[in-house]
Image (cartoon, rainbow, N blue to C red):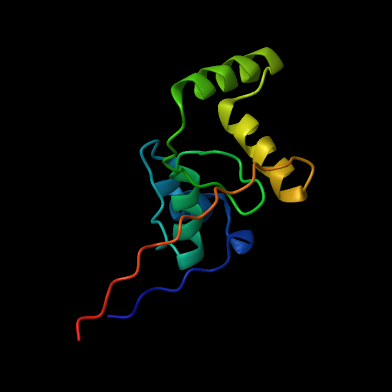
Length: 120
């Protein structure tokens, strides 16, 4: 059975146009959806992700760091006084050391290791 070809809408009279478009009059009509492309899927997944932190530079990493408690509480007080986070304070200190604006303490003197005697 051949499917009847439909003439263009602009060539139809009022009755033909009403008959050709009656499916769109249903308030529950949902047009068939096209499958998503890879780009559409990637865009949707990106939109659905949690916003996260804004990226600065190459991004950030969470690290574990051991620090003396008294020094940490002093650092926290300074950060609070300046209105910045602890991470911002540590980052500023690291940048200062790396740029040479802040001096590091001298490394500890190395203690020579005892030599093992060779058994003859």
